[in-house]
Length: 222
Image (tube, rainbow, N blue to C red; front, side):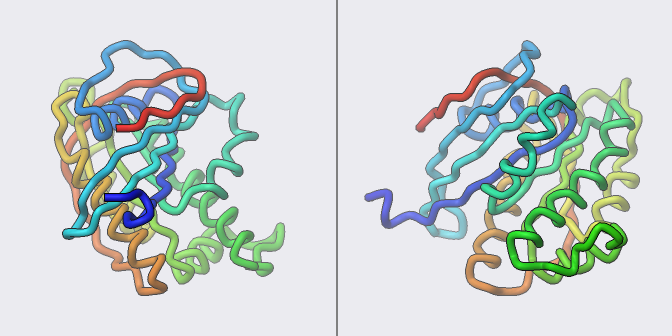
C-alpha cells in the first residue's frame, strides 16, 4: 500500500527527563525495551499501524525533558497533532509538572489557531477550557507502573489529574509492554476525530509504567 493511501499522524511525546519517554516510544515502534538511560535531544520514529481498520503512518517525536531544551519545546508542540504527556509514577515531581506541560501545549496550539484571547493575563484554567473546546488530542501517561516498591503517585492521583485537564489517562509499563499500544491508540483516535473536525470525548482510562531516553536526531522507519 502506498504511503499516500495512509493517513499520517504526528505524535509528540513530552515530559520531564527520566520518565521513560524513549522507552515508551521504542517499545511501541520497535517492540523492544531500552534498558540504559541516555538523555534524548530529539529523535523521530515511524511506524505503520492499523487503527480501526484504517492504515496509518505514525511519526512519533521523542523529545528532551531536560530544562536546557525548553526553548525547543514550543516548536515541537507546533509540529505535533497529538501529545503523549508522560510522568513517572515513581517521581511525584514529574507528575506535578504535567499540568504546566499541558497548559503550554494548549497555549501554543491555541496561538496557532488564532486564539488571540491568550493574553499575558489569561488565567491557566481559562486557557485550558478554551483549548479543550479547540479539541487538542492529549493523553496523560503514568509510566513505570511495574516499579511498585518505588511508587510515589497513585493511580487515583493520576486519573484525577487527567480528569481535571479533560485528558485520557493510562498507566503504562514500557518494560512489560503494558498499556503502551492502548495509550497510542487512544491518541490516534483523538487525532482522527480532530482532523475530521469532530468532538473529542473526555473519557479517561488507566493501567501500567517504565523508562528510558536517547540522543541525537534520527528517523527509524519500520
